[in-house]
Length: 475
Ligand SMILES: [Zn+2]
Image (cartoon, protein in one colour):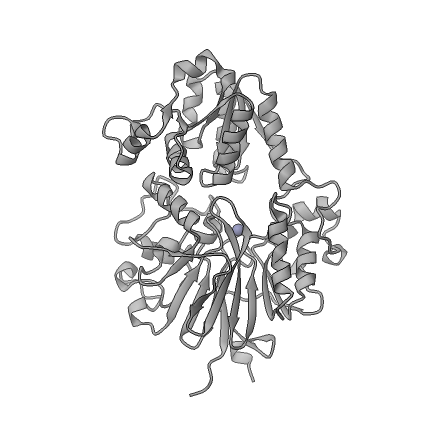
């Protein structure tokens, strides 16, 4: 039998913001990187009106194309007669799935993976996902376990080795993955952030990679979109992007983003309401700290409060919106929360609005009509931006309820690494082949000496002699 070759297949996420899924296969061994979905509310059929089917929920994701057709990953029973893929029971592959971090564009589909296939993610991410599932906001999922992912602790999947490289050590933790096979070295950045508050940690990746000759670098190129390039480089010409480790002059870093939000709260005379992304436990920690510093009480809605309690083991302040969800017959987690939290009532807030920093999710936005007006700080919660039809409705409701909308939307800030920083990262690693992805404009991220490859989805490529060739074109 011939010696196996290293085969790489991209399933999604090259030309979209997020949703990167690819596999590396060597013989019967296979690792799948990520299991996420690019977020697009305009294409989401299950918008709250259309009901997912009970026995077909997984197969329907394949039928709709939101879940890619990947052989040997789903159970026959869950495929419910769908014939587009080989079920796990009929597959010879030895598979493991690896998740860089707990953003939906990297893990929305983890619950579809056959429970006998290991899915690796950090312990903190598992705690947060479990808490989200308990409050009904987790991913659609089969009953399954997750495997711990630890920084620098190598995982062997047959002849393939995966090393998790720590990039951010708070909340659910963020990783990049170094994948080695007998044929070479592949590196996947996950979300690349080089101006975060712990950017030193992120830059340490480069120290590690200086020990390797990287054959294939698969790199987040989110920031190479028209908007960011036009205000960071005043040009869309990729040749004009010069490598630099620093935050470009006139642009802001993550620390500036948080400083702006803190400033807004500190200047608000009355009630301050915030809408954040409930899984961001480092944001929850910051908001609690800020409230304490400003002599306010940080009150969460029950769902987020339960997560804060589970993650930090503390008894947070809770405000119960007027909802049947928390009334008689409420699920067990609400009772557990009542025992482990301190309730703040409407009358207390009305009596002294300036003493509170209060969470409000879009789901419970009607609650604002019972509260005294004030500042509404949008900090990454849903609806995320004007591309979501709900965003305009949110603004209308805020106006009616007497809240002033504030959101850090400066034209000089972007959450992912800036184009010049990504270029610095790529040039320092200087891989033989560069695959830019997670981007509307991946082709704009150019390699230094190597070759750029924009892979075709579903096509298999071979890693051989430091090059990547299409499988059917190999010699
Ligand atoms: Zn992402």
